[in-house]
Length: 88
Image (cartoon, rainbow, N blue to C red; front, side, top):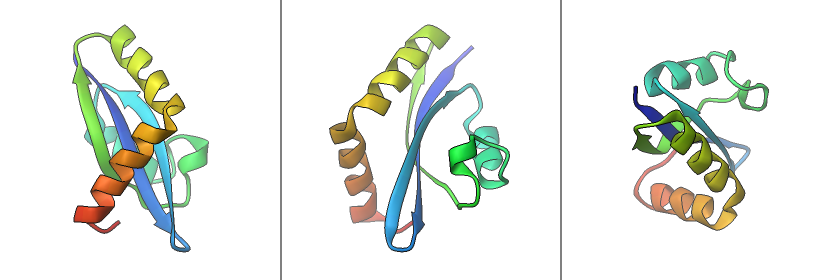
């Protein structure tokens, strides 16, 4: 089974909030976040997929999710690259 580490972003009051997670179904997970059934901290916002990476094992995906959550510089880089080419 394939697993994905993803970064989603939401714009509210001119401030971008990001969330990192892992899943085996990105479309379903993004829908859950946008319908208020995802993680508690993601409720009440409209989320957009900013980044994802595919992994062949759950263990590797969980490790990379942890690393991305802790690496604020990498998250900021992904966010700024997305914002320079798109709008949330």
